[in-house]
Length: 120
Image (cartoon, rainbow, N blue to C red; front, side, top):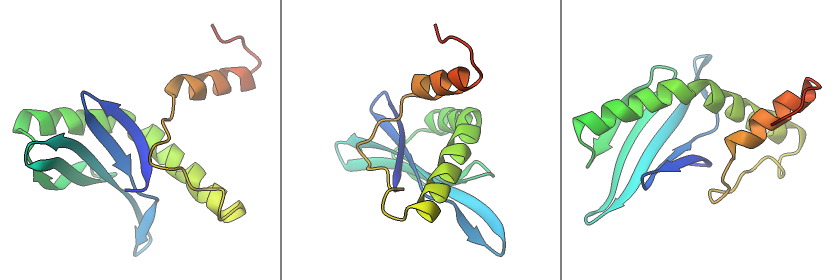
């Protein structure tokens, strides 16, 4: 995957750029963690929030990851749209490296400051 989103309990979530098939937009998501056998993974798509490939995660873990995706899908879509816009304006500047860690507090602070309020 191309864009880093988060790492929680050694499970990393990455997502693709916005893709389109027959004018239907979607984002591919992938959860990964290192294990004794290589990597456990779960790959799916937004907006339907279902996994179509998975290995090494329990059913409970997959349900937790689906819930996490559902709660964070709006932010992931927003980040992907910003990436798409940045690539349109500046094709080489729009790439976020995988090791880039996006801080949610920075997003909140930016939005609050744009509204002319103080960030605590």
